[in-house]
Length: 265
Ligand code: SAH
Image (cartoon, rainbow, N blue to C red; front, side, top):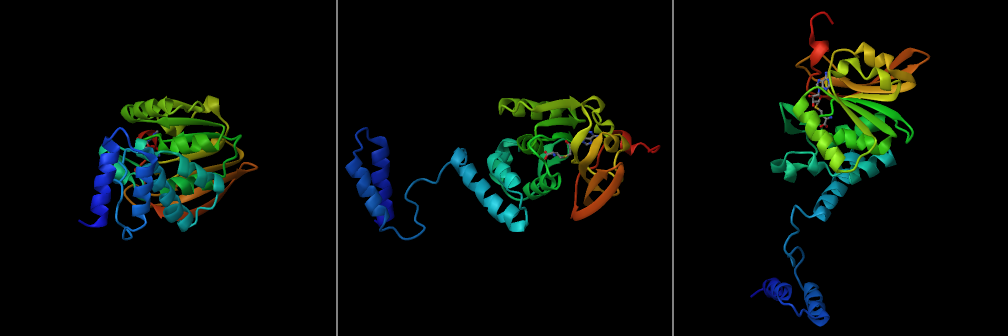
């Protein structure tokens, strides 16, 4: 019997036996040092083990975020802390830390981690900032924003998604998020002006009410482009009432629904 096989047998009997002595465990540890590299001594940790997910998040942060140019230390720390696997459908949990968008129902998607981190970085959030988010979706980006800013007002147009995200974020203990079910095109007038606005669905232009609700010095980040095509991620900055625009990477977001799609606009 190879050494790893009988080590496993010993571990199994140690686990099931009531009187596992420190000496017996020391023996196991000693044996481990003779194992060939890569041989598993313990059962692989269950994917439900929180430490497994933490390890995966750390890989995600190093490989897909820092490795692709995300620098803001606060954003990186938050991406390591927020449990993305809780925001994806149960059957997709194993893929939660892959760098790709995943379906969340109703033909909508949770954005890929890199894009969530990149948009969050572009918003240049300070801990005192007030943020407006259009497109709550799974609530994942909302959780990231809530850890970077003082307050988040998040609007979702689809009731089932809005309700699910709210329930999860409440259960996770977030106290600085308020939710609204509405067409985000109109923003949230009586909560503005906002230091930062993020739109996580695509449109061909910035909705005018959102621009009005942005504070002077504020930043608005969203995907801009024609329906059915890829879009440019843009950041619009308001200074002395004027817009200055920068564009970044090519992205593929679901379209912003509601008023913006009406022909009169
Ligand atoms: N940022 C989210 C979801 C992105 S998908 C996440 O990471 O999970 C885009 C979301 O925008 C969807 O949930 C969609 O229903 C919502 N949406 C589309 N048009 C909207 C509108 N006019 N107002 C508010 N939400 C809208």
